[in-house]
Image (cartoon, rainbow, N blue to C red; front, side):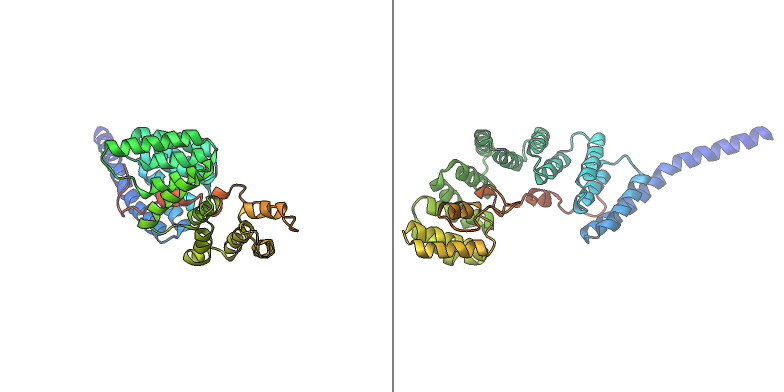
Length: 320
């Protein structure tokens, strides 16, 4: 009798142990779907609660940790997000998407060396992702390693030819930024004309585009772009700065300084405006704290890579 009872208990325990993982997996997927829905609804606090419950039910799925990292990014907790992404990699080391997100997360925090390291690892896992080369090139531009950035862009061109792909607008945007840093302003104009034909330029590119016209002596073109063509995309202070540049180049000091004072009064974010003001002995010309020191970074969105890589996933896809 005692033997039968022991065997019965052993059988029940074995059955429960066998069924428990399946129940956990079912619960995990259910809560993952809830977390994903909440994430897509931008209810990040609720999403975090659901994904934590998901991981409690099944902590062996890399995609669960990836979503947790995405949520923590949106909650502006970068250190915790990096830890979550690291957990995803510990379960699935060949995870180029997570490596790319780690690169983007570090880039957004201006930790460019770490960003490059992750982009290189991601590219080693997936060499078809040529956009990783563009991201690496930008990180090197930020570190003023311009020759390295140029070599990476050359690699991008070679690989594009190898795979019979047309150069994407992202290449021309990145190349224009590099050429601006190198002072090759005619090339900047050529590159951005290509981009302009395919998509709208953001404010950062518009600024270096117009500045390049002024730097190549094409004053009327630069003035027209700032005052007419791209005026709506610029800040009023930007327009006053370019008008000041125009008048001062035309030896009209009076109107030039009037426009320059208006630019400063309206909180111009272009560092060259303050350098110009110091050169012309205009009062209150000190560069405000926290302002970008380099023209090429004015209005540059350091979060753009990260925002783009936090793409929507389909509900129910957990990323094994």
